[in-house]
Image (cartoon, rainbow, N blue to C red; front, side):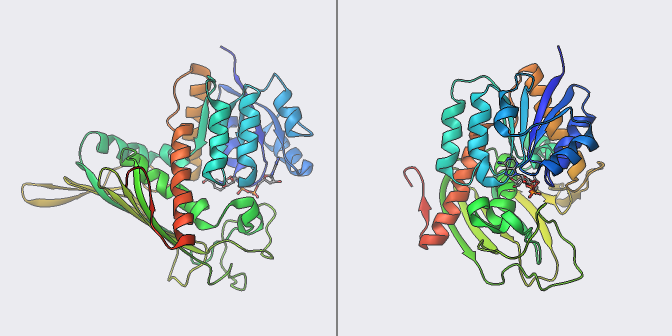
Amino acid sequence: MGKLRVGVIGAGMISDYHLQSYAANEETELHGIYDLSAERAREKAARYGVNKVYRSTAELLADPKIDAVSICTWNDTHAQLSVDAVSHGKHVLVEKPLAMTYPEALKIRDAAAGRSQVFQVGFVRRFAAGTRVLKKFIDDGLLGGIYYAKATHLRRIGNPGGWFADRSRSGGGPLIDLGVHLIDTVWYLMGKPKVARIKGVTHRELGNRANVGNLSFYKAADYSADKNDVEDLAAALIEFENGASLLLDVSFSLHAKETETKIQLFGKKGGAELEPELLLVTEQHDTILNVHPQIDHLTLDFDEAFGSEIDHFVACCLGGGGTHAPLEDGLEVMKMLDGIYESAKSGQEVVYGDG
Ligand SMILES: NC(=O)c1ccc[n+]([C@@H]2O[C@H](COP(=O)([O-])OP(=O)(O)OC[C@H]3O[C@@H](n4cnc5c(N)ncnc54)[C@H](O)[C@@H]3O)[C@@H](O)[C@H]2O)c1
């Protein structure tokens, strides 16, 4: 079988992780790239050995030489680009979030219905070594039934600016940008229970703290701190039909001592921490054991996680296997994100199904 010929749409910050991972994958040929900024696309093409720089998405998608695409653009373009790519028969790996809203995501579902191509959502943390290892222990029953989880990603200063801070292009702030990863990772590790109820709050109090100096943080390729109409903090309690719940908080700006990432899961037989470092908690012979797995990447490592995500995508495209981050999971996570924003706006709990 020939190599998978890939096109990358969007050549900003995160595209580097896609491009370097494809470049390192021997089953892949980096065939094309397109960005609104032709200069940026040309620079990335030269750096990663991409064959062709296209003049439009339409031109890239119309090229029969492209088998698969990575969509690495602003959030407001994910849904339409996904629909277009699927309609052109391409395999798709779309960055998170799947779309800006659940109704937008449903349009992708409709376009993909009945088609056999791979559609993978960029839930990169599912593919990180720590998550993969923990999932095995959970599936093997180490934690027993998981009934509670806590997930935190609090940045004291970390609004990436540019389009991230422009709701019309991002769909929101830290919830849709960081919360999407936390919700997905925990929900996946919990065994994807059905959502029952959501209560959420958001705050816009501090803005982007662009006055703060001497600290570096992730920035959009076209960074600017001029516009900011997204929340700077979001918190939520998500309850699932199986009785389990997830408590979540995320921020771009906060008067916190330091930036903090923590993911904890608590089950009837044991517990686990995925961040800041993989740790298993269990009990044997009336003694509590904190178990430290010995693996290379105890915390999220972008290079490792993206390499693993893209190797999996390529293998699915070439081998026809089902992806571990399918479209239907993207829809469920999108539903939870919408629920949190909706609850924050109305002040009411959002109730699903029969309640
Ligand atoms: N998986 C992760 O951990 C992770 C981390 C950061 C960003 N992301 C996601 O990756 C995506 C891109 O984020 P980024 O940090 O690279 O942003 P960025 O601003 O650095 O880059 C975005 C690029 O997309 C281009 N672009 C926008 N609309 C386009 C269109 N219609 N066609 C072609 N090019 C277009 C822009 O010109 C820019 O070069 C976002 O959806 C973001 O949520 C994921």
